[in-house]
Image 1 (spheres, rainbow, N blue to C red):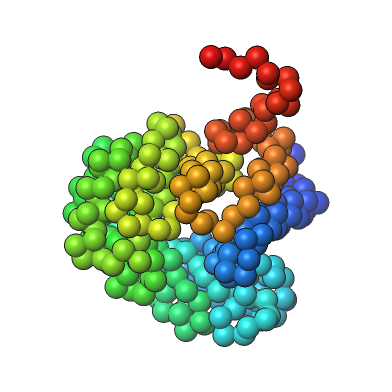
Image 2 (image 1 turned 90 degrees about the horizontal axis):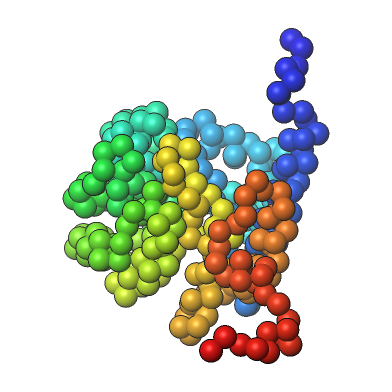
Length: 297
């Protein structure tokens, strides 16, 4: 069959893959500058929807050796391989149908064998719950539903659940209310937060979660991201913004912010919009100190 004019060409796909691995390598490098502990804790997870996909990952590792050295197997120390995968569902039925074409119950039927196979292969499985603070189709999402979905993910074998504000509607008071309910049943060590910055509240929500004892947060370089099934949603909280705040609160993140900025500046020209991260923008716009001697009072 003749190739259509809009079909991706092999060399374009190959170049994109190479660029992705270079960019990822720079991010890992930023996380390795603070010592061995940071190196150990930096992981690249693969999102998985089916047990067949787990098999493909295992085959890629054992047969081809194509998986990056960034991914190390827990059972084969020092070799390349996949150590961690992720599965994702939602606290909203409508969003889950739009996002992964499954009901919430259906997603658990699908994921049970995925998790079982992954654990059998020595992988860890992280769970994600989308629309935990609001849904673009259903509006408010009951905190009880968030708790139910989080508990089910842990019950099937996830070691941690990332609770997501997919459309960036959450506020600090709401975040603490949801976390308070989750902590009645789930240990704080098994919870992470995933805030999108659509309405500029991601960093405030992170601080609110820190006050509740949460220590794990998802973020994206420069604020990259979004979701085609969450109209108007922006990217995740920018990693640079998060690291800047933590550094200045004397909370060790293990990430070198200067190297992180350098990685984001490399990918920025390839996007069709400016990266929204505020710290990154400040660095990009910064002028030499001598030129700014007449400070605004």
